[in-house]
Structure formats: C-alpha cells, structure tokens
Length: 123
Image 1 (cartoon, rainbow, N blue to C red):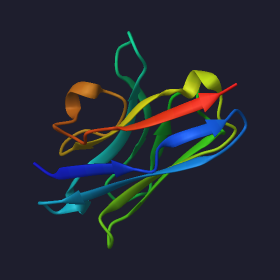
Image 2 (image 1 turned 90 degrees about the vertical axis):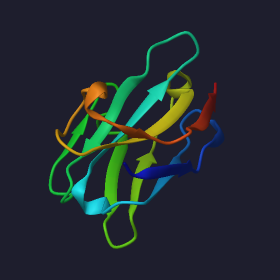
Image 3 (image 1 turned 180 degrees about the vertical axis):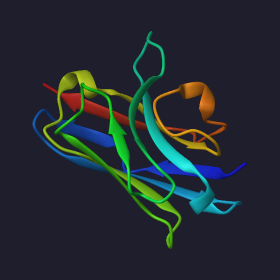
C-alpha cells in the first residue's frame, strides 16, 4: 500500500477557493489511480473526483463538475484538488485515496487512505 498525507484544508467564505494536496510515499505512485472523497458529519463518505494513473482521464461527481479540478504530478508523487466557487454544502473532511486496480467512484476499490483534511465553507 501507499502512504498518503493530505493538506490544504481550512476555512473559506462561500465563493472562495482552496487547493488540497495529497503527498504519496512508500510505493510507485504512478501505479495507482487516485481519488478524492469527502465525508460530512452524519453522512457517508462520498466520491468527489478521480484521476487515472497517467493523468489522461478524470472523473467528477455531478455536484462539483465545473468547480473542482483534479490533477497529479507523478514526478512529485502528488495529487491536487483545486476547488473554486465553494459552497457551504462542500463542507466536509476531504480524503485522498489510492486504487491499484480500477479508476473511478467506487470507494471499495481504494485500499489506501490519508487521514483527511477539514474544509469548512462559511455562508
């Protein structure tokens, strides 16, 4: 498995932006498809965005399409989530996940997770 550490969360006003970063170590990062998920209090962890190992394909939840952008740098072992036009409903703990097999929104396909970073959007 790969070790993941998220950073970049914080408090922002509605309409603002944040950029989350996930640093990977321990295994060959380019072997993994990567994803961002989020979990709000009292809710299930839900899919936000995914990027294939090569960076050539991405996938987004409908709720964030056009506002969030996922990217990766395999040379730096990093995956980013640029979040623009943030809304109060985006408030959650954001988790980075690594999947050695499939690419996409299936949470069960991810076998490594970071500790999460809190994003709070004030109205």
